[in-house]
Amino acid sequence: MSMEWYDMIARRNGGYKSRALYTLEGNSAEDIFEERLIKLLPQYTSVLDAGCGHGEFTLKMSEYTDHIMGFDNSEEMIKIAQNSLHSSTITNVEFVCVSTKEKMPFDDKQFGLIYDRRGPTSIIEHGRLLQKGGVMIGIHTDITKVRERLERNAFKEIKIEEYNEALMIFSDEKEFAILSDIPGNPDYTQPEYREQLEVKLKENQVEGRIAVRECKYIWQAIRS
Image (tube, rainbow, N blue to C red; front, side, top):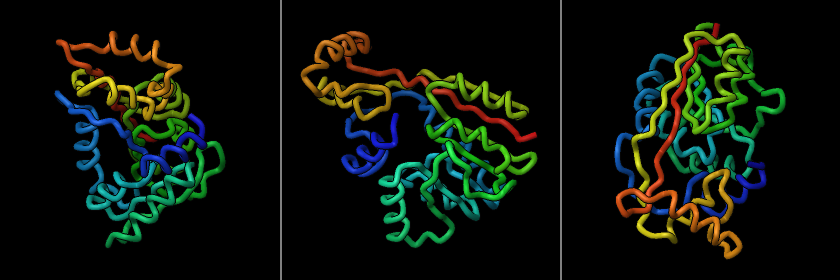
């Protein structure tokens, strides 16, 4: 998705989050990723959050390490992150607006850990930022590029795990239609997408409920 789309989501939704209301059943990959990250963070004094969005998760993780630098290419997301930081008592977090498509304003081997929570997988191309033996960990819905980039950039001990047990349960089709807040989906709330919405509704029925299966991958690798 374009930077303009993320800026729009930030202004409309107050950050990188969906407006849809749903309940989650099963063991979520997001929860597993967070638990693993919390175990890793205390081992590193300098951490990079790749694609931090509106910074809510970054601030939450700041409790477990000495310093986190969060970056995103959306100015609107970073504005929200900065405001949240200034409204808190947290002193070990910084936010910066930058893109992985350009030279990043960080030193070589500046970070011991880089985590990528549904952010740009192109951060893997910036392996110079990670200390030798440092860890990069992420969670995504598609890991095709992740695998290619890790192998091409000489990462080792590559681990990729698939999780597809959890279900997002929507109360009705109105809430389901707000899937448009998730990258890759059209705005199903608009009349011109009604037919596509009907197809999606039929595809996502589980025991008479409207449900979307959470299919995500958690990956981890070490810098050579």
